[in-house]
Length: 127
Image (cartoon, rainbow, N blue to C red; front, side, top):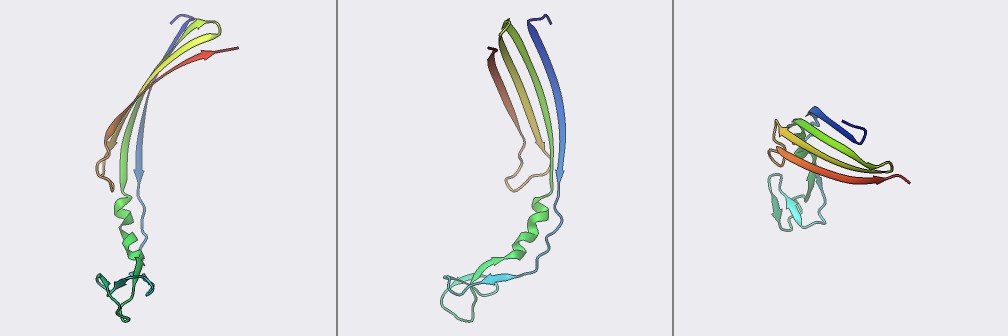
């Protein structure tokens, strides 16, 4: 390259893993008889039976978190950029980046493989 141009490129690889052990909540049902949904120990039911409690939330539902948190991604980034010095105080810059994500284990939303292409351009003027 000459004094007016500059070119650079890089490649980055990231391996990301995540896992949460626990929580291990017991079947603990929070209730409030003032609400309209009643809980008979099996199903939410409608009605006004004082022997049936109202289900607000059961913390045992959170026991599925370890399964949902078992994550593994590979991310590949490729970046190339260049500058062209138009004048001593004026420079044009262009860049391109491609990111590729490989999802090794699906998450709540399914397989999250994909690509992202980013193009940048800028003009720098030094006063």
